[in-house]
Amino acid sequence: MKVTLRPIFLGVFVFWIFFPFLSIVIWSIAAGWRFPDLLPEEYSMRGYAVSFDPNGDIVRGVITSTLIALIVGVIATAIGSAAGRAIAMYSFKMKRAFQFLVLAPLIVPGLAVTMGIQILFINNRPSRSVY
Image (cartoon, rainbow, N blue to C red; front, side, top):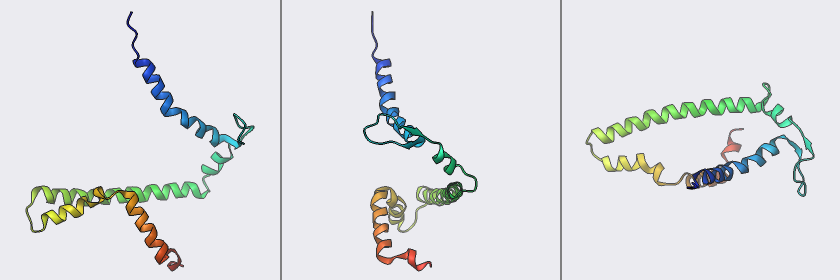
């Protein structure tokens, strides 16, 4: 009788991936959860009520963020497609430099760029210049 370990490994893998999310789900409905308690003493749906309130700021923020993401995605796709086509199909002066500039965001990790921009914002305080 041959015993396969594949179902056991699959079960352990699924448990390993999804078990941490269980605490997030419990935290989302917990009114308060103190350290020594295994489970929360009280449960509340207040967080969901605030999150999904049609008159709240969260729904408007999600809609605004989604619209900005869609617009940026369309613009980036158009620019990237045009640049890729130009690099692949045409021969022009400074082609290697143009290719480097197009691929530079893939070379430099996003976190390093983000930290640099954050330092720039902290030093120049652009948020105070708006008011």
